[in-house]
Amino acid sequence: MLKKVLLSIAITALFLLALSIIWFLKSVNASGNFSENQEFQVTAGQGARQIASALAEKGFIGSELAFKIETTLQGVRSDFKAGTFALPARSSIRQIIEILTNLPKPDEVQVLIREGLTAKEIGSVLEQAGVMPANDFINLASSNDSRAIAPERTYEFLVDKPTTASLEGFLFPDTYRFFKKAEPAHVLKKFLDNFEQKVSSELLAAIQAGGHTIYDGIILASIVDKEVRTDTDRKLAAGIFWKRLKIGMALQSDATVNYITGKNVLQPTNADISVDSLYNTYKYPGLPPGPIGNPSLSAIRAVAYPQDSEYLYFLTKPDGTTVFSKTFEEHLANKRKYLQ
Image 1 (tube, one colour):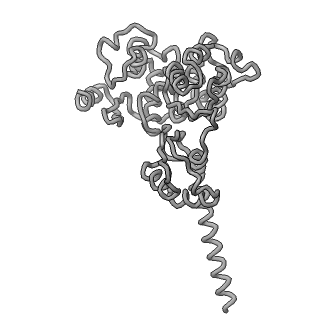
Image 2 (cartoon, one colour; image 1 turned 90 degrees about the horizontal axis):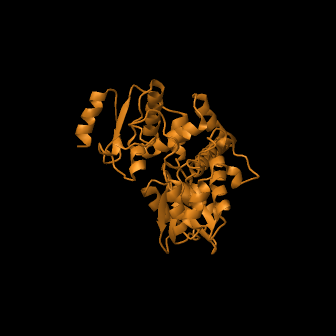
Image 3 (tube, helix red, strand yellow; image 1 turned 180 degrees about the horizontal axis):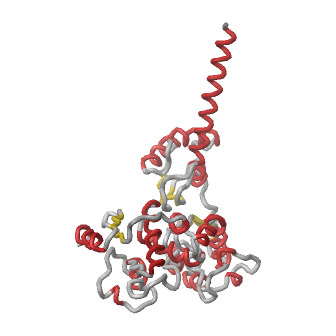
């Protein structure tokens, strides 16, 4: 009888241990819930417990306990470095620990490239970080042939890029480490290699399965990235834009108008939307000639897997939330309610 009881206890303990291990592995490897690159500050003297609490409070991790257990297992509870760290979107607990316990080497700099930046804006970031002059990067990114940068590589995601188009749209936003005064071609190659690694062939195939070219998908993703913020809203917005293209309706994207004017407004003026440019999607139907920035993985996913809906219009409120509507009359009412 005693043996049966002990066996039962042992089996229960093993079962609970197995569940705990499964929970822990899922917790430390799961992608984070933040969809955009973020910065996180570690102050001198902070340990694993304080950092775990701060990360959880900001929504970067889902479990303080899993974070503390992982730092114990890795033996890095006191190895955190003071400073400002760039956390790539959806970083797991393990990835965050690796970032927070490793500083760049003396001749390296860590650079956060935010989603949606243009090649020109990326060049400015790189110059400020001491990596390379902005104009050197911009000139190289303007190349219409990746073989000028990486002659030994063939990037399949560029297969249907027009021969006259630059590499705008394929400079993947992420956290990078570069050597100071780096060779420009090496820097740009790092962006393209990262795009190839992060944007899976399955994702690109899904864009093509929808009857679109990869290049058109990246153009639309660059628009979606600037129009709406959350994953769910981006999928709905992508569905609306694809629908508009299918029925021959103008995209009427404020983001493309802002790209022309250099403004960052929720509602362009009548003068803005009258500007004669192929990037003005109020004036010219269809997609603009090229991407208006370098889109996030979230936006690329939204374009690859759009959400069908009855909506045909949407707007972004001042607080960043999106309001969708089915009819033009409903859309006008929402504009009067939220934007005037």
